[in-house]
Image (cartoon, rainbow over all chains, first blue to last red; front, side):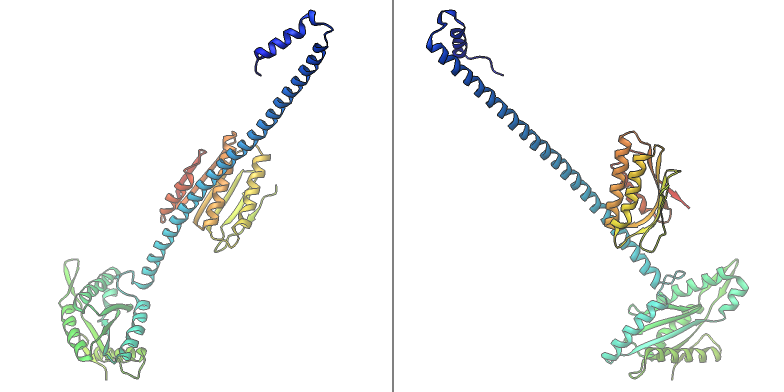
Length: 261
Length: 125
């Protein structure tokens, strides 16, 4: 509330002065004075109401802004956490894929991965009329090693043989554990005689292996059967022929490599 | 006392409430088709508990994977607990993780960030 202006003060003084009592101008001035005050009051009321509305609108804007900020922070947090969950799933997927395609003992391909690659490579070999050799390799008298020295030694033999196998095969070849003590070596761009040469070398390296058991060195040998994919056969027929050649190698005294018919 | 128990499935966690003990437990993976439907009864129950009961409330969590809408739902629940805590209520979250999956710790830490009420992250066997 502002104080009275000099003019207002003067008008008030004039109206209060008894010497103007009964003067016609005093009556008119007094009415004008009343109307002036009504107007002033009304203007103040309007200003108050208007200020009130303005502050309500302002409060609402502030609370909306606060809610917006909160939602935004929450959204950012949800996105951040969600990204991390996805990353976790992605990594879990990768380790699952690895667990599902690799042999847990030796770390080389398992039967699932071998089968997948066999299908791909045999299709490719047929499409481009390229050679593809499949080798079945079996560690000789493995059951005996397990029975006499225990599974732990058996496992070590498997790991050692795999190490030698990985060292002897060519870069483009894939060797994997087919089951038990039986391994499959997939050799793309390779004829049966070439595979025979690689396997002869591998056979020598395996028989040169000595797996230490207490104070003794345990000798290991392996037998192999080789088959080359034929244009008209499925890869499982090739595997069967390699298996049959392996059987022949076993029957003719082990520690040798036989070519399938 | 209007407790509920939802059996878990491959995509939804098992959820169980105990008004008497003041415990809500949730365990498993959470990527439900309709997470609003699943979580709103949990949210409602907690809201009712905080409004009507006066004894402490604890959330026992053994959650593994959460999809985005489940994360949002959990944050809403934690906000509810935070507000109650600010009002002087006794609330707590115990988040248990499997030692074999330690990355869950980092995620639980993220949830914990804005919470001032007791929020423990501990391993279980």
